[in-house]
Length: 134
Image (cartoon, rainbow, N blue to C red; front, side, top):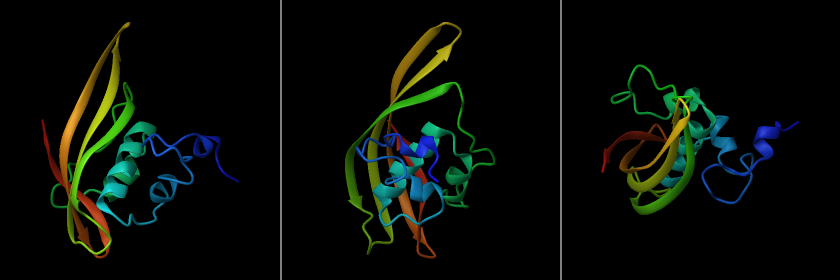
């Protein structure tokens, strides 16, 4: 039986349900492209899935703590650019803008994180390596 959370629209903005979109990657299925992995990592931040973030972060660059901040809500994702990262590639780049809301006390703050993320395929699985925020 599918969890009610997985029947909601996917946070990545694809228009599909979470179950039909990023849910399969959150459950451990490998991404076929760098963009697909990036979208699933955004979704993991949005739903608080630290396990997915940990296992999809390249071990060479992964920090000790990857837990999402529960006070931070991710409110939208826009893909701005992509380079390579297809099913036959070993590296890829995805540039995105992710809007967020942070409530500290009673005053919400809003912003947009823009990042050009680098991905690498290792043992047949896409991994997030690092990114330039700007």
